Length: 90
Image (cartoon, rainbow, N blue to C red; front, side, top):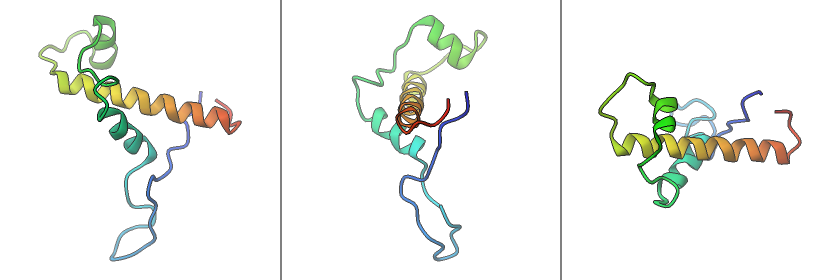
């Protein structure tokens, strides 16, 4: 499965020395929106999710790290669903 398009959320032109396309990506934008929703990013997860995200060796994982991973998963799922709706191969 190819990675879904990760375009710029707020594209900008070349101004004040910035490269074209400078700014946050759609993935970053969607993750931020998910992170703002406590029902989506709870900061708690099952053991298998923790192991999948951080590996089985790491300890001391903080709830904000879990919430960030949850936000990224939701962003990736949304990008994949949008790509599928556009008829892009997955």
